[in-house]
Amino acid sequence: MSVTTSIYQSRVTTAQEAVKAIKSGDRIFLTGNVSVPQKLLAALVEYAPNINDVEICQALTVGSADYVSPEMEGHLRVNSMFISANIRKAVQEGRADFTPVLLSEFPLLFKRGVLPLDVAVVHVSTPDEHGFCSLGVEVGLTKSAAESAKIIIAEVNEQMPRTLGDSFIHVSRLTHIVPVNYPIPEHKMTSEGGNPEIVEKIAGHVASLIPDGATMQLGIGSIPDAVLKFLRDKKDLGIHTELFSDGVIDLVNAGVLTNARKSLHPGKIVAGFILGTKKLYDWVDDNPMVEMHPTEYVNDPFVIAQNDRMVAVNSAIEVDLTGQVCADSIGPKLYSGVGGQLDFVYGASRSKGGVPIIALPSTAIMKDGTALSKIVCMLKPGAGVVTSRNHVRFIVTELGVADLYGKTIRQRAQALIKIAHPQFHDELNRQARELHYI
Image (cartoon, rainbow, N blue to C red; front, side, top):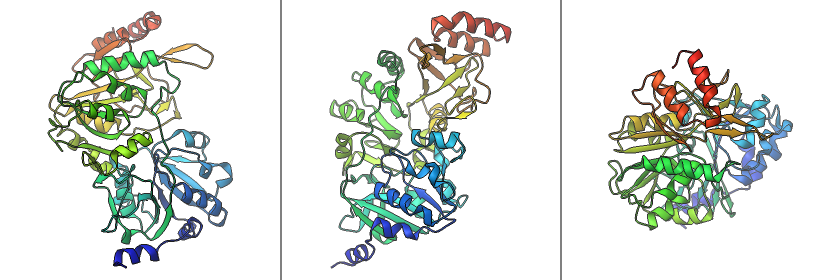
């Protein structure tokens, strides 16, 4: 028996026993996205009545969220740096906390001791012959957090893909090991109730801005994913992004996505995490084209800017006529978070030939069927500005492209009204005149 095998076996335990290492008053990090450690989280919820005032730091998590139920109050309290759908109600009701932070700085909160960690709860692949486990589908936010914690509790999953890059942790660093064998949850990019035809039109406009040899960042949602379908006639595209999904596989197979002209990490897809289906998880497994890195590297604007022709595609809730982009709240009601939007907008704007894009439908359809314009004269009171009017470049709706860079407020207002839905043109023009924008 090797020393590594001996270390591994000596630390194997059950989920129920492992979570007993978490004490009252501890601050813990929870691996997120589709990498949420399901057995450990279920065991923690079961154990929660025995502990008090435990803070769970996380970003986006996919799956059920029993750990933010009202019954957990006083025992477990989430502090999220990005509000995912499963905890949104708890945050809005004040039962969970939200900490605004750029995604590029999320791991640094732990690494620099701003939020000292007692425990990290992570999800990894089985170890290789050298004793190294891969963090698999979620490397970006997890690696530095895990390395900053006093205790690491790990689910070691036979079905976690072994992704390459700066993605490994040695079994000797794992305090408690819980062997599991279940499929990694699948997460398909959807239109989230939006109109697929509108999404396709937006994607077509976005694709027209992407040059041959571009390096792309694709944010979360249906629009960035749909853009990939419109790129078959492009040449030598590359990827440097916080996340990617299944759409990249077809582009690689078609010879479009080669990464050959990347000025940073040529030949490699660089990312922090993956959201997709089993097809994607199988494809990234031990794939030398894919390099996973910590988010403080992937999302660093000054790293991003080293990619020539960097294209960043992100979404918004609403955009005002001066170019302010709200993407994290509906008025004062907290909805999501800044994510990597500003990191990549700024990074792409500093790139040689860079193209920072905010893409959104021109309207939002309410539950009663009425339409609201997403191009507005003024953001709702209390709305958060994610991308400032000073950082913004291209705004895209299904009706076209507004290039705001170097433009006056008058020119911006006129350009944005043109890509707003026609039914709102008169009202937007009236409001713009009242504010002396035009």
